[in-house]
Image 1 (tube, rainbow, N blue to C red):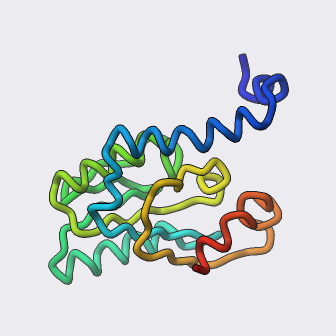
Image 2: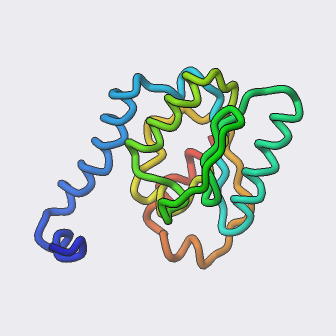
Image 3: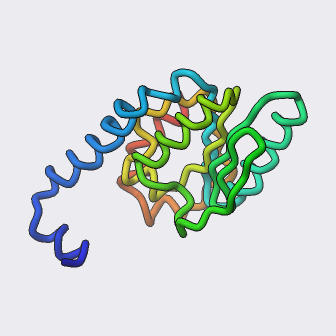
Length: 158
């Protein structure tokens, strides 16, 4: 069964509930790891990967242990592997698992590349962000994900 067909037959409130429940379940299973590490979220239309890489490099240069989750790679405390998931922001369980690994490795900071699609699907919920960075916001990006972007915008400005 294709996802689009599934979306047509399942009431939207169930899909919304799923998108709320999964990040909570992931955070619960991995014991809310973002409460034990400083998380920096980087979002925007362009420049997310570059900004995430530069931020991680600056923090490492300052002597901190750093984790990085970007469209290019996953890195925890100097150990890196390419991101082969074909998605910038992995599913809710995966993000919490990576955060837990970073905490267990003794990382001080985790730099997350946060996409508008990830925000729309609420993958960022139950992550305590220390800092949020918007690199560049293009009108077309807001139009494509209008509902998710507008709902989330107060989070970025608070």
